[in-house]
Length: 584
Image 1 (cartoon, rainbow, N blue to C red):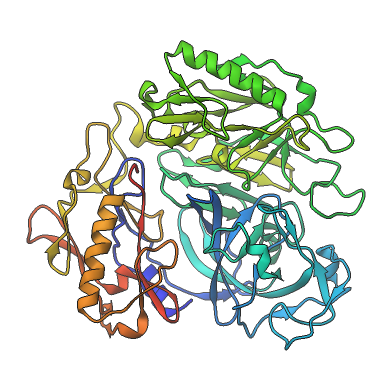
Image 2: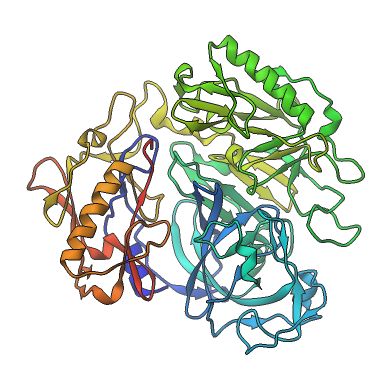
């Protein structure tokens, strides 16, 4: 890990503004840890953790991983249905990269298809006698034939609570793919990381490298929660206050094997690598929805069933299921005095948000149950996961009509998976799920006080000058909204939009006065600068200071450059603060 990045993570106490639904000004306390760079041969990690973020324009979920020699941070979209990891390597330079040869054991594990070659000078992604694989872009349905390679990756150990020390996997297999495959992906990403049931998917590779149990867990973030989710590899524990270890309270259901592959290219007889579950029926407000339930079974041709997807932003239903669900939902909503309004594509049922109350689990609307192996085992979908805000006045039922002849009858999309802990146990072939984690947030329970740590920030200064924004955002109202909280969740500071815009504007002005050159922003940050124009001091980069003023003007918490800036590459430093939206 680069020294500047290490300084950033080893910060003393870094402010995190406004990352949860209950705070508009949030303190970030990243765990202080001793940095080691260890190979798998020295010490076995207890588990591995990777961050997951959501890009709110493309609605894609992505992670980041340190790769190569020297280490390069690579961001990639995650896909539960993809078999391998692929990245565009046009600007990737690494002395430890090696191609995987045709006919090798790794090529066979990857189900390689022949050999590929290259007429240009050797580099990552350009070599002869290389194992051929088929990287796939699921957003644009694009398929390529490229070579399989391997390189070192560095990942963090976790104890279920914190990011701990970093471990190296010297030979992680992936494909270097052509740049056209990036079409439709979030612009800050360089490829796709597959999480499917295959030997070269990221979870299986890392589990094998560290001899961990072959299981992984996924918690997708929502725009209104903390902003950062996680991929855990190797199993629990998964600690969450106040309930403790969530791995002990998960509901489980069998993972179903679809006998016919759903991959874009496969050999006849191959089963699907995607994750299917055995939904038997659907209920709205505990009432059974009437439709042909044979659609929920997978036939001999691999048609039907229910699968989980991080690619589809919303759940897609067979037309007959969709129409029945919407009809029952609309009736139940009307009984709750919820006013229906004109539909907004692609949704079929929309409502006036002014007629919908809010509770701990989001909008107060009829619940939707996916009934599994028995009537007592079900996955309940609450308002936060069933509804989507399309504008300030309209909420829509976040389910989409998939037509009358879909390959899969129910595709559970990302929005329905958010704020749920999902454990994919590939040893026992089971899915463990928590249902909405919003139910377990005691800070939002009526009559209970929060068990999290808040402090009373009154104002913010940049280089000694107070910045102007609505300071009532810093107070906690009667509904528990607002305030300043200390957290170990987010790696970078997240701000309410109005605080963020004001802070960035003032910081940029002060930086310009110091002859610091601003450059193009690097997502997710909004203000980045040329590192060549920034001097170094005992407290890190010489940039404007940021003060959090507490109970008096003379009592403040000062953030210096080591804590306010993050190095994104050799030439660019960014202000380590992120826009958290206008309704956090």
